[in-house]
Length: 221
Image 1 (cartoon, rainbow, N blue to C red):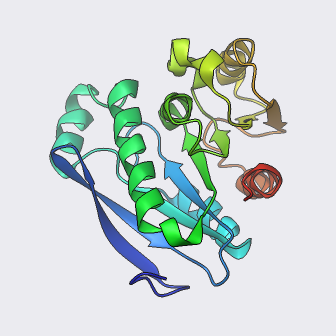
Image 2: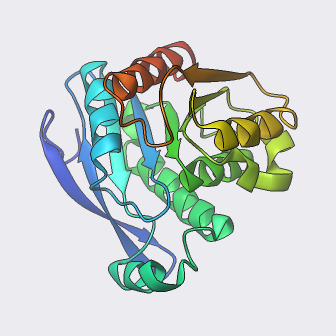
């Protein structure tokens, strides 16, 4: 499969405009689709939560790509100023470049592409999907901020699953607000006893199971 050996994590570097974005790519044997992870505020490809979800999807025969939305220099600035993490249009633009890279890199395999967004990455995923409806088959958002997608929400065509902690009251409201503006197939799942980061025992496993089920249903050829 190109130069990528199955069942081994590969470091990749993806061009986006005038920068390069670092990522981790994993392709299981007999992969049936590709899920691109869009991390949230202050996170990166090293996110332990996203890596946990990715491992569940790998077991379900999905290739996964976790990548940094910001360069290392931008990350240093953002840690002080917070100026990039809420720049949804910048993040979505880079995600679109990554989607294009995946489409070209694996064109022979016709992978359907799904997006898994977390926190602000959920908003960026929706904006990108609205701009590339023919390339994104399904979206899952974990503790996401879909409200940040703003005017793009009615334009999203990809089936979307919003997963929110049952005790994350503020984010529940923001997700409900976003849902009211969307006309695609959309579902809200509340994970009982979970707060924003899904740190409670068993809650991240529930997220992983819900995500896999959604991609099994909608991220298909």
